[in-house]
Length: 355
View: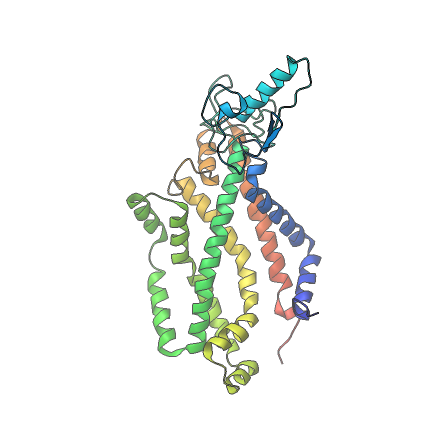
């Protein structure tokens, strides 16, 4: 049975696993990503399972279930915390064993839901009894839930923008380096001109003209994010196109596209793999900074930058700024450790030498 990766790739992966700091950071980051992608299962105001009159209901990923379905006196969406308390009250006053029950997530609050049940005005301090484990923000919304969903938004933004930017930049850079001539000269001048366009001004203008949304910021990031990797890939392709394996492919009649995709690109992949984690850090930091400055996603979208701005404006509620700063620092440090480990593990000097 053929191996999925080459022997050299297996050596690089083994070296990556031997760098403990980067490897454990990778496992931690992947765990955080999985938890964020499945956030509805443990940070949500909808129940995971409801058993009522012998039937099981699964509201988390299903349709909206109204309160009268479970014998409550209203026809809008069920408040499952109240339903759980209602079933518990029935069980206390019933002489027979109750068979109705509700299984709620660990954090039974939506990131958009406001809680004014406490005495006083929000923000409120962390409370285990109220199940606000990191407290609430200035609007009464659960901070832990907003951190989790904000992380999902930031990571989704980072990886979508990374994929689109690198697809454009890698292919264009390889074509510039391989074809050279007028094609290379034209795109060099174009990149030099386009890179002088002020990114923040473009953001400010577009946000003032249209409703800011997730895909708008992805598009803007892609418009300006492909240029950096393009220069790297152009330089590497210039070096690789004079190697013997490229000359041999040309001699056998391979076309330019086949040489770029099947020969040059696999041999320059180390640059993509090395820079990708640091680009993820930059994208997360970018979205957080834009949200903090007020040019980011429209409220009430969960956002780390918006939470950070609330924390700065409410220093008398230190749990807000402490939570978001800890979360941002943990993610950025984790991804940076991964990037350092990948850069060391995939360094070609450890596995080959030129003579």
